[in-house]
Amino acid sequence: MLRDRLERFMHGRYGQDELNRVLSVTALALCVISLIIQLPVLSSLAIALVIICVFRSFSRNTGKRVREAESYFALKSRIFRFFTGIIERLRVSRTHRIFACPSCGQRCRVPKGLGSVRITCKKCGAKFMKKT
Ligand SMILES: [Zn+2]
Image (cartoon, rainbow, N blue to C red; front, side, top):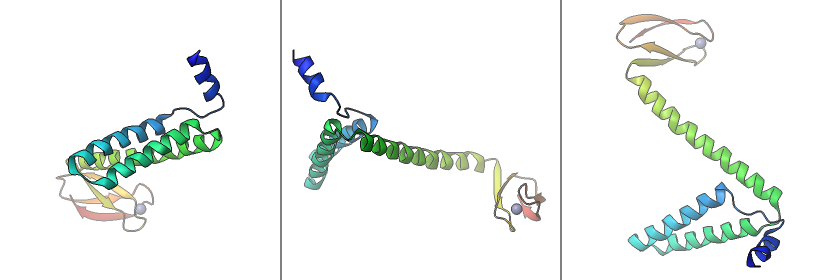
């Protein structure tokens, strides 16, 4: 009975998605942090996030909610690529040096410890000398 009524109530409404789960977990984390460091603005922010979650779940404007979720995924993937880029540069910096081509700016990767080398840019073919 209750389940049927809940299903009827949720019919045509957006429901849950990953963005809502992330907002809920963030709200919970903000509550815990605000208890520890006694900063009331954090609990207000947590309440605002919970209100957004409830609004998104019960919203009938599913198209707009889907677009919000897509924006969230785009942002998440940009952040992910930013950090994997940093990790990759740190990994490469142990064995290689990176030089920018003086004519086109293309980044050229050269193994370390070769002394002075003439580098040929793969993009524009410009040649330049660098010490590795
Ligand atoms: Zn170049």
